Image (cartoon, rainbow, N blue to C red; front, side, top):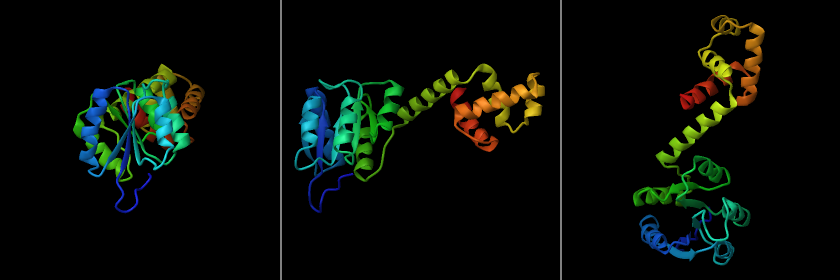
Length: 216
């Protein structure tokens, strides 16, 4: 992240078009960054102008639903313009896919607006120290989303083969248990490897245990 020079305050940009929530963030930020100097932007245009101005901001708190923004457009633009500045998405959006996409796009954290002020304080302390932060509820949402994705990609037969594969059974034993040919099992295993992005049974077994935990 942009590290303030010795004795310099931490410059924080709050990007939100709801005055009441901006006021709430203004009250919370100093509890994590006592020396914070806070700026406010209420649209995508204002955020991008402020983020590229001088002096630079050390941290940006970003609402996804800003006027002029759509989906993750503002986040993507900020990561192009100020790639090293940590961005904390603080949003009412609860879609796990959006949460995942925001982290993949470079957000240092995704904090639901329904979270307590203490969650936000903890997150900001971690991020200012150079880390990333994911609250438990968001991690659970990611887990559920992963399970849904795995269900949609694997057929019912492949899921059953995956279960048996994860226990260490051979193709021959899997074929006998499922009453199918060994050639068919090999075809299913190859498809599973491809969908899981692995290249051997050991990797598949480890990935299978993770996915099966999410699937069931």
